[in-house]
Image 1 (cartoon, rainbow, N blue to C red):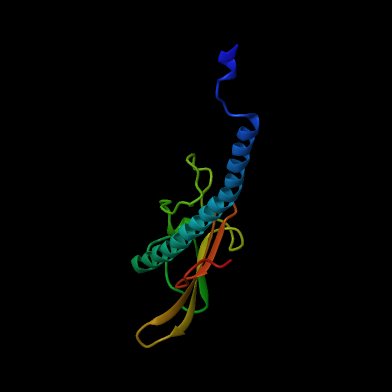
Image 2 (cartoon, rainbow, N blue to C red; image 1 turned 90 degrees about the horizontal axis):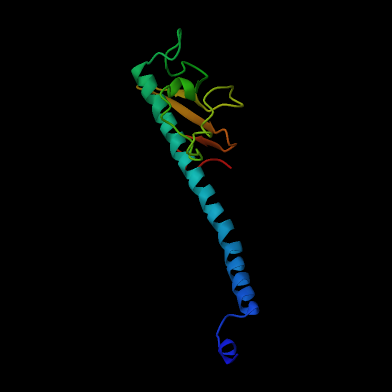
Length: 157
């Protein structure tokens, strides 16, 4: 009988206290981790938006055909809009929130209200070159959106 009385073990109260402490630590850590993941996603979308503008510029320089009747060109006046499917036919831009099965991607088609696009606006006509402004909108199927003017330092909120 004395064998059982001398046995050392944690009491139920000690175990409950440890579980509570771990729960408090996790409660503070998880929101911070989720916030950091969201920042990384927005940063990645910002980089992709800049890449989208560079792809558009390359398409224009190459005067690449984007449909049966249209080629990539700068606007002669006003503005022109190019969609992701036109500029990136090989699907090189991938959404940062893509899962391993590829269920989340950038919206490649649609109108300026639903798809991903670059809008190029002619600002001024110069003797040697014209000045253009690029407005980019990237949308993915998970509902994340990055809107920016090319040259900005981050996506608009």
